[in-house]
Image: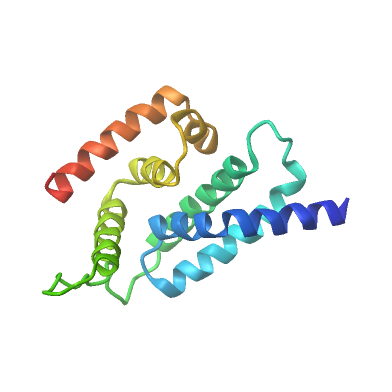
Amino acid sequence: MAKDREKLFQAALKDFGPMLNRIASAYEFDPELRRDLVQEMALALWRALPKFEGRASLKTFAARIAHYRGVDHVAREKRRPRTTSQFPDIPEPGPGLDVETDRKQQAQVLIKAVQKLPLPLRQVATLALEGFEAREIGEALGISANNASVRLARAKATLKKELGK
């Protein structure tokens, strides 16, 4: 049983570790605190694995655990005073930037815009960017697929306005 849990945990970290990092970036803007949050997410996933029944995919299960930890983190951090800037400065594009640098800057702008969304919209936007369907988003967040679709539509509209598109 313990070996199965360890194998499942290692597989989840290998397959979904980058997803956990991206979900954490939607909840925490400071890189050091974000690393701590990812560790908290991994620990929460380890602790929750015995409850995994396979009704949803392991990816959805991991995303749900990560989002719950993210919400807890935001609530905890809201009570604590911040000493650093909430949003990192994103450099303006300059002449001669190659395509990869431009893509990275566009991704940073999108991340910054997602981070500004209210928490319920940020949650669905983050999962949608991970490729989750409305049904899976609903499962991960404990809401209906219709509710997830409505939140996603609102998030997209807000992001379009924020990004000027």
